[in-house]
Image (cartoon, rainbow, N blue to C red):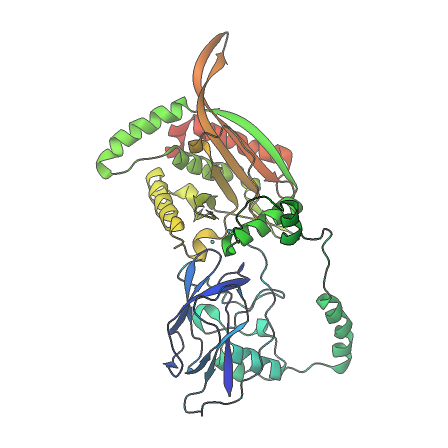
Length: 433
């Protein structure tokens, strides 16, 4: 029997990819865990591993082919010793589309680890095509089978030893209308804008068409979803930076021999992480019908790259020193610019920071990256006149704007969080205590 190898979902947000390079050819014998191909997702180039042994029968997608949908057959493999030309097995039905997750969200050289525990209903189940076919024949729910393959993937051996499921006819008949309803297509309230209709508006004008790559399409889809579905509200505060700048200069002078140079952004990351600990009720993410209250401060930081952005996550940021945060941030930013981040490095987090101050932007409103509860927009530090008692003085002032998801954080709670961030920045020595 010839089995189909399907385009994998290498991250929870992947819907299609580009087959960058085949690392096998027709007739090659492959083993489980062997690298078959390099696949470009919307964020990175990742290696795709075989989950079962066999002989490559055919390569169905050429190198460089883009827009290949997840679960589309890309190759066929036959059992070793079986004659070539055997009839291919029917394709397994596509797995449910993954729920939208964080940035970016960004994918790297390692596939995102699938959960080892049995998934909840509706969660993507990672399984080999052969395992899916055997499960379908036995009437098994793959969500109840624990996978032993790479990253928890369900493989042939996992389903062979499971007894076939039985389902009373009455239950089966009752579930049919529900299944039909679930499968019914939904219609969008607003018709999508077509390229042809927009082009007609500019007929006779000179322009160049720039086709969207996977990253740009993902950014467009997720930001549209964010603005349409998240009830944003905005809180603004100014913070005086003079004490922080003086303290930073002192620390950098002392750390010079170690090759460490702290940025203002490093202090902002630390201040935000500690503020989430001070106001733990604001350290939450939206999970559809509930809020997940996070214990650690996992802070995402937006990094601009050519054609898009990543939001790498600094995990347990409240427990790390300023120098450790600085080194980790530099490493993540450098690998983000070359699209070498692993999915687990840019997914997750409960809070994000977007800093455009170094570009001279005084203030702006950032869009929340779901499922985060908030994002902090950081402007430039500018010398301004300030009132001190009855006198006017000059101080370096930076504008902060906190975009908040009202489903997770109410106004007073958001104000408390922003006040804690400001206090930390205006009292920087306390962040070392």
